[in-house]
Amino acid sequence: VAVVALVGYALIHRKVLHPSALADLSLLVIKVTAPCLLFANAAGGFSGASLASSLAALAGGPLILGFGYGSGIMLAALLRVRPAHRRAVVAASTFQNSAYLPIAVAVSALPPLAAAFPHGPATALGAIGPASLVAISLFGVFYSPLFWGIGLWWITDGLAGGGAERSRRSAWLLRLFPPPVLGVVAGCLVGLTPVHLALAPPAAPLHFLFAAIGDIGSLTIPLANLILGGMLAQALTSRAAQGRDLVCTVASKLILTPAVTLALLAACRPWWAHDPPLALAAFVVFLQSTCPPATNLAVMTKGVAGAAGSQTPLVIPGLLLAAYPAALITMPLWLLAFFHLMTTSSVP
Image (tube, rainbow, N blue to C red; front, top):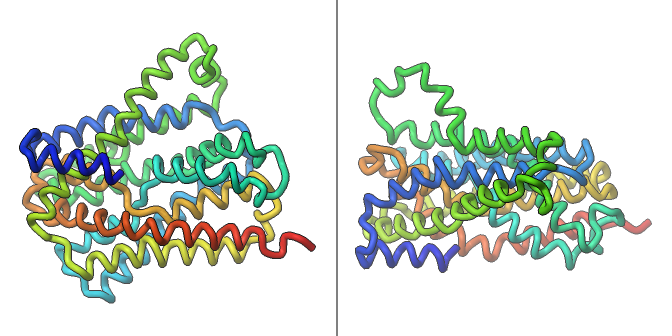
């Protein structure tokens, strides 16, 4: 994330890209690459997950959003965050990096730690990585529409401006179902039906189409980070984010939300700790709670016409700049706490 963002920073700083190009790249991500990425993740199928673990992963999205939003509102009030900055602070406290960072952590960390899980096919050394991808995709079924639909509308409502826009009641469907939401819905319709057998397997007759969509979707991560770096180049000159904004975001997103989630998992530990699919779903939900704010927050705010007159697009890059280095410390500690909770008293 840091290296690709530095490239974006250099492109803007060296005037290779004009700042207005960031808005165009943002729209490209929202309307093309992100829908393809979400479709490809969901369309591959959801085999290997039990009904209980699937429901747990599905419920995890709204649950983590609720914890983040509540803690962000509370801390913003306690720390007296400026009203002009509160939307950015609460958004960064609510929405986490829910896709490529959890995928990278789960695929890297789980195989060598597979022995910590109860014995079972879902946690075998060679299967735990792919199984975690299934759980992450299930987590995004509700999370992605909430983020790209209601979240996009809420974050950018004050940026699009104008009572005339808000008076268009017929536009609410477009706000709730932007292209990324349509991508994940279409992906679920394919992934939860036998249709995915004609697309996802390497020998499937339409696999070339699935691969092409996946290739386009894979551009989402580097483009989002390039945009983030370009926005940082502008944010560092404006210095819009204040110290209390940074403290509120880090404390809410990286400390309070994981703490509440871990406490909830500890309370219901007997239900999930000895069931392999449920244990994996619990891990994915907790992993999501420990992740730093979504870099796509920068994409959302930059891609809205009229956003230049708001503080939100200038504050969010500073919050991301503070949260990601802090997550290098907090995420490993929280994951150690989870594995300790899962394995404690597991032997009679």
